Each structure stands twice: as C-alpha cells, then as structure tokens.
Image (tube, rainbow, N blue to C red; front, side):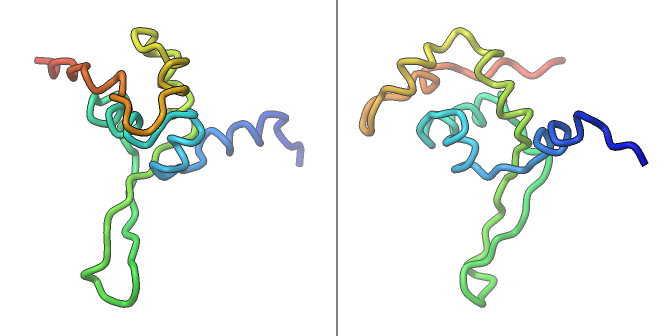
Length: 106
C-alpha cells in the first residue's frame, strides 16, 4: 500500500484544539481568541463534555476547533494589527473587542 506524502499535513489540519491551545497557537491572549469566536470568525465543528471530579455539576462543554480553521483566522482578518495584539499584555483592551460581528446573511 502506498502512503500519501501529505498524510501528516492532512491529519494535522484536522487536529482538534481547545480554546487555550488555539490562542497559544495564534500567539494571542485568550481574551483575543474569545472575541474571534464572538465575531463568528471561528465556529467549532465539535464540542466535548469535560467533567471535573465525579459530579455532573462540574461538567462543561468545551468547543474544539480544527488546526486548519485556527490557522486561517489571522490571514483572513488584516483589519486587526496582529503584531500589536501579540505584544499587548494583560490589562490592555483587545483590538478585536471594538469590532462588531457581520450581520447574518438574509
């Protein structure tokens, strides 16, 4: 059986990332990433239930984003100075915070 040369890239593109992992991959703060989701720039294709302890009371749904969709966000939105975003420290307003989501298509 012949193996595809791009199989590693295909698997990597579909690798699920949680919000913290996605923010780290983009080199932005978690708050910046949360604004990207609020703006609709990222939509998770799946979510999983994560339990803390043995009680369902501690369960939360965790959105998972594909690596490919995360990697596509920055080039798709040149209106944000991503270099500034990466350098901004804690306590500074997130540049995407002032943006509004695009209206839903009719």
